[in-house]
Image 1: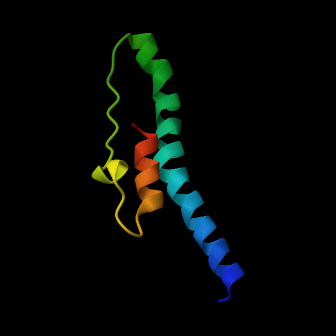
Image 2: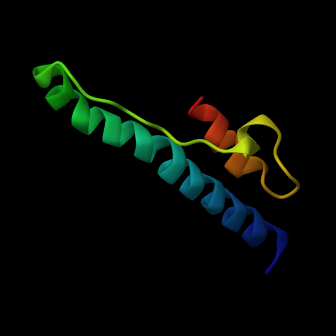
Length: 70
């Protein structure tokens, strides 16, 4: 694998983590909000990570996705 391939793989990993950890949460919220508004009740609980406040080596992207939820 050359440098370009590695960069593309890393970009795909970053996009995948954001798609799941950030946009996945937003999509679920958008899906349930109309019902919650209609019922005038409900709870949304998002679980973050300690990595949101100080990422460990190699976990920067993951930490940034968790901070995006804060």
